[in-house]
Image (cartoon, rainbow, N blue to C red; front, side, top):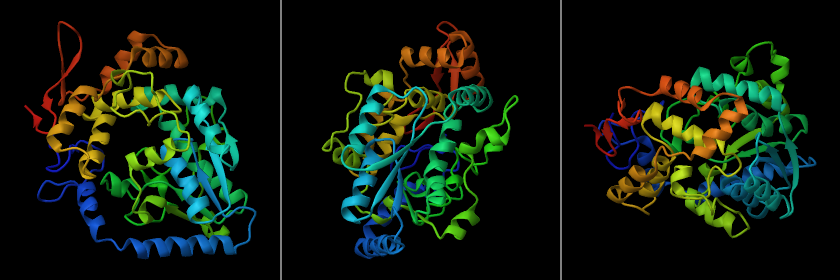
Length: 375
């Protein structure tokens, strides 16, 4: 296990890229941003927006939203900066949190039309349980309709433009088919979706027809309908995790203000707002790869100059991989298993090269030191 020399990105992240000097490509991209002609990209973005408006459709663009910080920034930017007539698409997660309910309604009430979609909860519960056992990733099935929904609405309503958030190939430094430009129609090539083929999720008596909401559209459908998809982050200099949160908070976004940071496994309160399952999933990710969401937060903060690498290590050591018992209990009730069975499954996915089990407490202890590697 090796870490980026500049940030705290470990080489255990799937599809991660490091250069010969041991620097991750996310840090390299952060340096490259200083040389980007942002005025030219802004002009390019406006031309795309003007092209969408010239189509004279009922709506100029679709923005997939949860009501969280990033989608709030996207929706307002499209409406106020680009002058687009925006249709929001909200793919509601099962067990939507109260904060999530408030945030999506807060965004809509700022003056947007919105289509809300929800998958058959019985099917999603079945897929979630299967994904937990098969991949150790219970939120994997919910990611499929999340990304497919905005694009499906664009195709079916003849809306020319789909605006996504950030390109993970750039902001995380991964190599997984996403490309390094602003084209977002290939968002299904990311690690979790792995192509976006719903048949990969099939279980028991389900058929592909049962999973139509999970299937990412074929690329030729975008060509037939003359639809473009873009990553807003690629075109906007002001895009950032903290900047988007500040922007959204000023417009009414609420965070997890009453929960312990140790329970949510991160040191900021404005992510994973609409679903508690994301918190549990980050804990499992920690045991699989040796990092959780606090690491992701720290890397953003180091690259954008808010924290030194040394100071960021403290935050990661303090909060990474943590998950409150309540979230574990709720998940076990959701998929109808015992707490013991939950930990048996999690244990089967623990990376034994990174962790060892304490024979007295039964807890998994890291073999690595954050920022250093295996010790």
